[in-house]
Length: 248
Figure 1 (cartoon, one colour):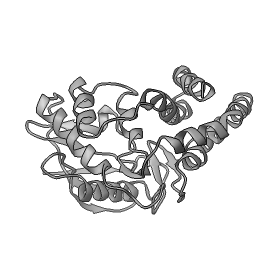
Figure 2 (figure 1 turned 180 degrees about the horizontal axis):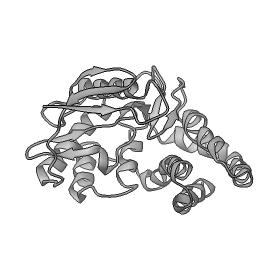
Figure 3 (figure 1 turned 180 degrees about the vertical axis):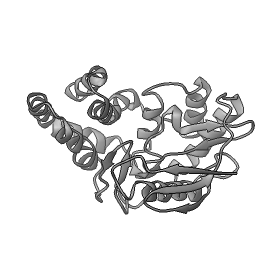
Figure 4 (figure 1 turned 60 degrees about the vertical axis):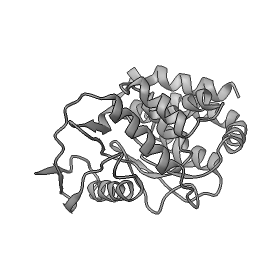
């Protein structure tokens, strides 16, 4: 069966970037663990893709399969931080300029562009000042606690993980090469993943001792993105991220 997704964004290449991301995931995830829908045709207005009959219910086996599949993908080193093309995080652009330095990538390609989107000029200026005051410590901390660049899904919240009667599927990626723990952090931003998922992932590819603090820092990107898209209800999450950086 075919599902046709239409472009609901103001960006002509949004579906093309999504199709590219799906292709990257399909080629790098073990197919016996995690499924990715096949794209049959894509253009600026619509994408025809494999339809998923989602049940909405996780099984223990699916949680373990997703964990093992992601760990396998994350374990393959990539040559730099960034990606070969820019793409989108939800309804906002995501810049993926190439960096050899993870800390600088996260600062310059993730946090700074989101701060620039803040509409309230006073809050924008305050955020820039807070980030600037901790930027050197942030870059140093992230560089010391990231061992390699990995291909990541990039937007790994529960709504982008679908389960049918047998398999777990990943959709709507924002792929790039990053510290693999950005994916795991995102799974905890909204919750909704079985507790077995995190336990199984940690078994296959142990999280760093610094992960709890990195989680708050990495999810600042998603908190700012949601604040810029949906408003004030996400500001408390942004504050948690800023406080994590200020604690370094």
